[in-house]
Length: 113
Length: 115
Image 1: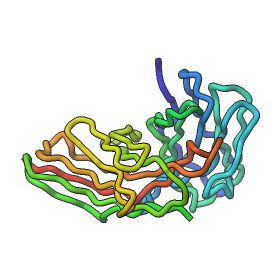
Image 2: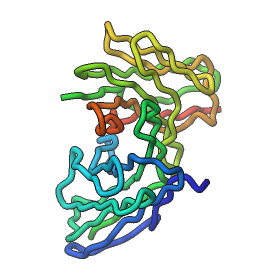
Image 3: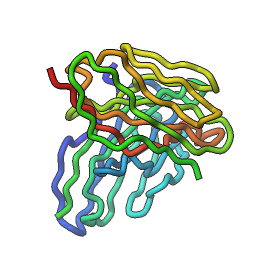
Image 4: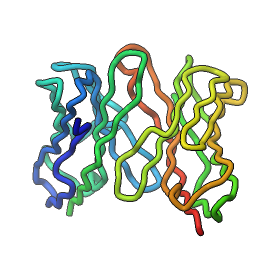
């Protein structure tokens, strides 16, 4: 199993550009989520999904869109990047039962100029 | 709302020293509690967890006990190694049903262990 994979590892954007951060898992997990990590802030939840076709907002959803068309993939879209979105983004997945161990991807480092 | 507070870092210790990283939480209901570790340049890995009061999670020599009376989940290790240098995050799971997977994290504590 590859676990949770994320692409790209690093990206530089200009203000106003759009991009999609990719996340995929091969563990057949129902639950997937996106977090952003900022210095001194820990990780904060952006969006999450409990299954294909179902998504919901987390703590900091503004400026981000998600969709979940398959169990395996959960892309995060930035429609118009802003410098405040400079961060490290982590995708995570887990089963939806009582076992809630989250498996994290290696992260995408995003710099918005 | 739910929140996690953990001790500020960085923490610098000598090899074989005793480690404690304090973590307290505020939550309604009965959350599960976690410690995650992030090694340099990597994603987060689950270190240990506890799902109910008085449970003790343990892994790789680290331990933490879920104390409901003090709303705490302090991380301890009796003898740290250089390889334990990392950032440690305390977290709780919130909500019910589908949102049970959502984690609320503390700000993280950076640990550096010197030989």
